[in-house]
Amino acid sequence: MIEIVVEKKLKAYKGLNTLQISKEIPEGAILRITGPSGVGKTTLLKMIAGLATPDSGKIIVDGIIWFDDAKKINLPPQQRHIGFVFQDYALFPNMTVKQHLEYATTDAEWINRLLAIGMLENFEEEKPAHLSGGQQQRLSVLRALAIKPKLLLMDEPFSALDIKTKSGLIMQLKTLFAELDITALIVSHNPQELDGISTDELDLEQ
Ligand SMILES: Nc1ncnc2c1ncn2[C@@H]1O[C@H](COP(=O)(O)OP(=O)(O)OP(=O)(O)O)[C@@H](O)[C@H]1O
Image (cartoon, rainbow, N blue to C red):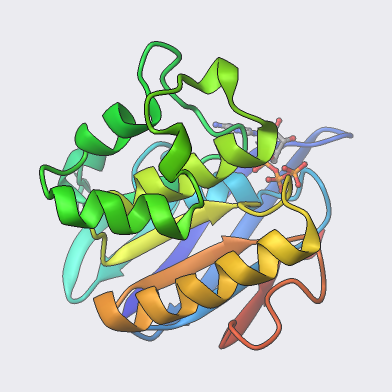
C-alpha cells in the first residue's frame, strides 16, 4: 500500500499553482495518471522517486516512511528501489543495450527474457544513437524492470510505439507485473492505451 498526501508549489503559466495529491494505492495496482500538460504529473512521479521534494506531506510505502516533512524524513532515491521510465528515456549514450541491463542486474537469463519482451535481441550490442525512438523507449522500460522493482514509475512509456507494438508490449507487461508483484504508476495521455490493464485512475486537474 502506498499512501501519498503531498503538496508542492509549481511554476505555472500564470504565477504559481499548488499541486495537491491525496491518494492511497493498493499493492499490485496499475494506476493511470492523467491531466493536462504542465499540471505536475512528472513532478508527482519524481516526488515518489525522491528526485523532487514536496513542500509538505507524507509518502508512506508498505508502512515505511519515505517522506515526512514534519518528521524531517526524506529517504534518498537509492533506498526506495524504484524502477523509473523517464519521459526522455535518459539512456546512457556510451552503453550498449545489453550494458544498460547488465548495469542493473547480473542475471543473464532475466536479461535475455527482457530483451525478448522488448524485441531487442538483435540489438544488444547497439548503443542508443543506433536505435530507433521506439527501440530506445523500449530499452528504457526494460532497464527500469531489470532491478525487479516493487514500484515502477513510468512517464508516458509508450508514446513512441506504434499501436501493434504497444499493445503487444502492454500485454507482456501485464503478465510480468502480476508475476513480480509490481505496483505501477503510469502517466498516459492516450485514453484507450491502458484499457484492460489499469486498475485505477488519478486525474490531476488544473
Ligand atoms: N522542482 C520544481 N519546482 C517548482 N516547479 C517545478 C519543478 N519542476 C517542475 N516544475 C514546474 O511544474 C510544472 C509541472 O511540470 P511537470 O513536468 O510535472 O508537468 P506534467 O504534468 O508532467 O506535464 P507534461 O504532460 O507536459 O509532461 C511546470 O510548469 C514546471 O515548470
